[in-house]
Length: 425
Image 1 (cartoon, rainbow, N blue to C red):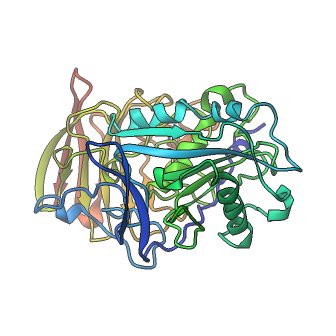
Image 2 (tube, rainbow, N blue to C red; image 1 turned 180 degrees about the vertical axis):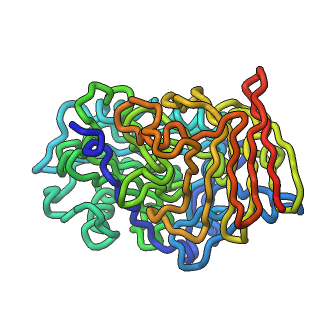
C-alpha cells in the first residue's frame, strides 16, 4: 500500500468550550489522596513562570480559538505534571462483542503509553492507568445505535454513549478518584483505521455528563487498530493513545486536512502512525516539563548566542523562542535520535513557527525544511518523508529578511549540544 494511503488525515478533536466553571479532581501534594475542589482554572498543566525575560515569549491566542498553542494553556484540561490517574475502561457492544479478554486490549496500550509519557516529560508526569473493571463493559445499545461517525461532535450520540458508560461503570467506579477517562473500544466497533480514524478526545467539555459529582470533561476514545499490515503494530500501535491524551492536557492537533505536511513526524500531535516520535519543545514547555531556565527568549534587537542540549536528554537549555508578535514566533530546539525520537535520520537544529491564533487542525505550527524538495532521509513507514531531514546543521542558517531575523547553527559540541546564534535587526 502506498505511503500516502497509510497516513490517514486525522480529524480535529471535538473540543467544547472551557470557559465555564468546572468541578475537577486533583491530587494533594505530598499525600497522594484525591481531593475535590471547585475552580474556574481547572487542574490544568502547570503554567510556565512569567517574568521580565520570558514574558514577551508567552504568546496567546484570541478568544475564538478553540484549542490554542498559547502559553499558559487554557483552563479545564487535566494536570500534566505529578501523579495523574487515568480511568481506563474497555467497552464493547452487542453488535460488536469484545474479542478475547478485555485486558488484552488494555495491554495494547500499556505499559507503553505510560513509559512514553515518562520519557517525554523527563519523569515529571507519573501517568497511572487504572482498570477497576478488568472485563469488557457492555453498553446497553448496539454500537450502530449511537451513530458514531468520523468528525462527530459531542451531540446526542456521544452524549448518550458517555452517559451509558457512566451508568454501567458507576457501581464499581468512583469517578472522583481520576483525572481523565480513557475508553478503549472493542476494535471491531466501526471501520478499520485504514478507512477512517474515529478516535477522538473531548477535552475541557462543559457539556459532559456528571458522575459522582464531577463532569467527565476530559475523555479519550480509541477505536480500531492503527495497523497498516507492516508488522509494526505491536511496537507502534499504542501511539494513538498518547496523541489523544495530548488533547486531554490541552495540546492541539498539528496535522491538517492534507495530513502531516506542516510538522511531519516531529510531534506526536502531528503523526501518531509509524515509528516513535516525541513532542516539540514548545509543547513540553506548555505542559510544565521544561523550567524557565531551560527556555531562552530573544525579544530584543542584537545578536545572542545559545548552546542547546538535545531535547530528548534531561537537563540543560532546551529551546529558544523568537517572538514576532503577541500571537506568534519562531522556536528553536535540537532533535537527535534518542529517547522517544527513534525515526530521526538527520539530527540537528529544528526551527518552526508557532501561531497561537491558529486553531487545532488548521496548522498552528509550521516546521521549516532546511532541505526543501529533497524527498527526506527516512524510509520508515508512515513517516512524512519530506520533513524528515528538516533540521539545520552547522554552517546553515534560517533567514526571515522581512523581519530582520537570522538563526545560524554555528557548531556542534562533542557532548551533542549545538551552538546557535540568533540575530534580530
